[in-house]
Image (tube, rainbow, N blue to C red):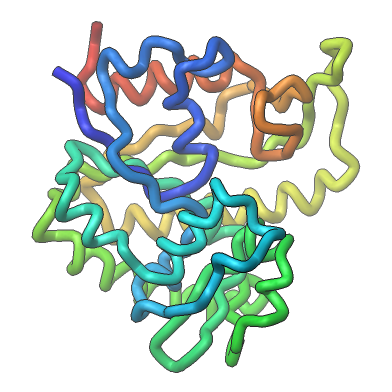
Length: 255
């Protein structure tokens, strides 16, 4: 049986379900990715829809505009109701690393990498920024959003159908010669990882029955040969094979 998967997260949770040799060529035998909410913070996700003309921003690639649109328009629950996935795979990279901008009292959007790299960042009518640098304020907003997410998602999914993908930024990578190299900003990366781990912990206090994929103790590192660009979020091929193995275990696919 092919299981339907929804994703709320980033490349950590979406790219391993890819048919190229670097990732997992046979995944479609077992899984279909029915929708992806990409680079949306939970704070933004749980606010009201926001309408903004994004079509004319040429510095937002056409293939990425749908991600901005879904973040702005809050179409997640409509997609969830329509697609009825068997599992919802979640990672908290965006919540740990990216700011959320309120454009009104009840509307917020995620300052994703797509937004950061576009003129749209300067054109948005931002009223207030919620940042991890003000941790007590951020955590209060975030926990409130997670509690409301739990209530809102309950008509569609049981807690056991949620899978938290616990990942981390890598502090080392393989260069073009296959030699391991450290990143220069290791202390900053480790700080981000601490925030991410704390949010994972808080998430599981709310969703106690959620399934967990723990990649934190794995020894894999980054790789400049990653198909979609070199980044502290992009690992060597073996990482994604291991992640897929763990994913099959938590979804009950033992073939």
